[in-house]
Image (cartoon, rainbow, N blue to C red; front, side, top):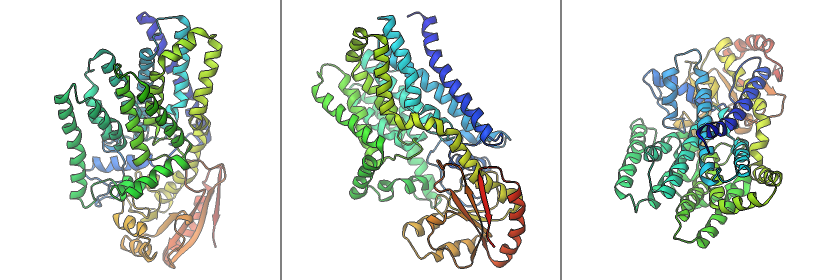
Length: 518
């Protein structure tokens, strides 16, 4: 295939992705009164953290160290732009670039899997497969979360490309070892890929393996020491909150419970397990003279580690790095059979089968594409409006259970009752202490208003008075619950806030039911 044809081949899937991206932007702006809002409140945690990093502090509240970010490097990528009025767009731009990069790598890997120069039929099949992989690996969905997962996918696929290139040509790309090192700094889960890669490739490149292992561990250990020096433990709070095995320091019961939870409660966890079982079977059947078994073992171990220690979630982002890696490895492992089938059968038949396979395996991701604008609107109608009230109408210290949007460009104290930024709150909540701790922390930080999900806090302090309820009326996708209750803390706050709530209610957009409680 000529360089010109190859450029067209790569460009076509990118154009398809850009069209989907633009349509999603238009739909989001139309639903949100021309406000671009991410589909997760968590994106604004990193933006808020980046603001304070630019001020020389690491935390959400000024003067109070905290570690709410699940990524080591992502907030530091955002902080150079944190003083700009358009800083909220930076995650979207970075994610867009990472997604385009991922598509380029996808196509490159497909070139290696299917020798497109063999026939025009194989070329068309490969092109269509590349387009199908965009929705079935949720590349579009993770872009609009505003989180670091798009970069995580890019690095995971780049590592896969490096492994395949190494096994085929016995040459290590110049970027191979840097990707091994950087991956875990973007998200800890990438250790599941980096560690098995270093282990299984150590034989032929022992010196490079040792150096890479040391260079990978130094920043991870250094960051843990940095956190510990600020009495924050050795892991970010977000990792502790979301990973039971880490919280319980590798307890076998916690690991087993996490594994069962992943394969029983989440469809993709079970699908991942099925592919893992197939890899184990294929490993026994492979001729060990071929090097394919090394790739299969690396990815199989990585998938198993994710099932043991990793997470799945309704927003389809935690597992995407390993899902996309496994899907391409599955195609690589069965490339001879697939190519033979494509050459024997009519093109339309092979494309239909590809659609069926991608559709069934990646159904949750394909389905979620249509929900992106509504997920964004959920955040706009709930978290964005909460932030408006405490920045434009009632700028006081507050207590919440979701700290993202309300802390973004807000220098008043935000008490995080869920515990991502408050070690005390995390300790009390996990130990199920007497609910009086909520009241004590609120008084300690002079909190005047609370905005919380009542479902998360069955017992409310006695001197908290409910004054309003904000409910999204459209289908809920991204928030944990549809209803948020506003509580005034103290009589003085209660009297003062009522008038402001009435003014606030008049400014709310459609899609919200706001009730003032007398």
